[in-house]
Image 1: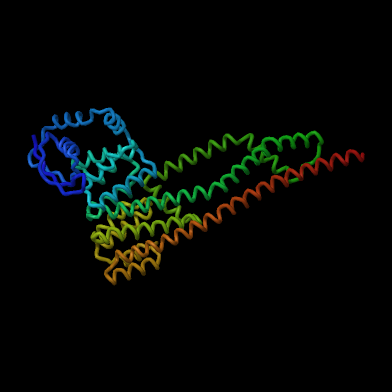
Image 2: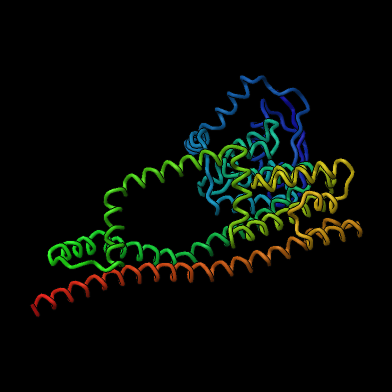
Length: 427
């Protein structure tokens, strides 16, 4: 029987401390919960029971049907929706900001009344943290919904001792990204409906009306006008080689996807995306905003510049930008300033470098980078509004031109047939 010293709070918020005897740490936590004590720390004063007794105690604590159901579902891979990921992050940040330690905060999420994947995730993370796994490593193993950036930011928070502020900012970031995706989806509903309507109309033209027109020309023996002839040949090519073209396109797409999943291919594709009009500048601004905000968080929480850059390189999803940050990290490690390193690497805008230089000269680089991040957020919003205003116009114009050309080709054919019929009547 082991003895655990605890410090915690009672059900009325009063401070409680003492010792509890239990065969395992899990059982000690259960007994404290029975006494309505929320532990803030729990330290073993004697060796815990052997592993066999640990397993038996865990099996005993999971004897209820509800716990058995959660344990069964916890054995598989758990995926969280964006809303659930935001809920978990926001609640955990609130609990940590209120003064709770990590394990009691996770237990509060675990004790939610309604069942949800958030509850199961909290249970599995708390078990791994209790067994000695770091919080960031537990996130990686429990659910793939916690991406690389998320886990690396949590790791940075654990190193700097500022996990709660980082989680709060991450919750704000996740909400902003969800709002951005929702706005883009809503903005694309109208253009998508236009595309579908245009494709439907062209399908009817090419598969029903054009063959009928061809039969009419063959019957009357009239000469097709050039626009009508081009349209008929395009329809014939579609009927004859459409399946082969689809197979070739599918093969090329599969080969392209396979290539960009390789390290060299991914880096090439991540760099090529930055050269796409409208989309490329938006992606670049998103990286600069993320770079500045993340570095501001890390520096303001006491991390050295070199350590913050190393963490930032692992938190960058774009392979091309990750290579840039790694090169900046190497130069800073050799003794160069951040401004000089960014200038040597290239691709960092001059105005960004100038502001970083001001932060280095004033000795307040963290606050300066936070302000730069806010500025880039405004730039991102402006570019999104610009894209959302241009995309529907481009789609409408493209569909209008295509429908106009098809209609013109068909009308030219109809007029040619009618003209031929009039000529036959005169003779």
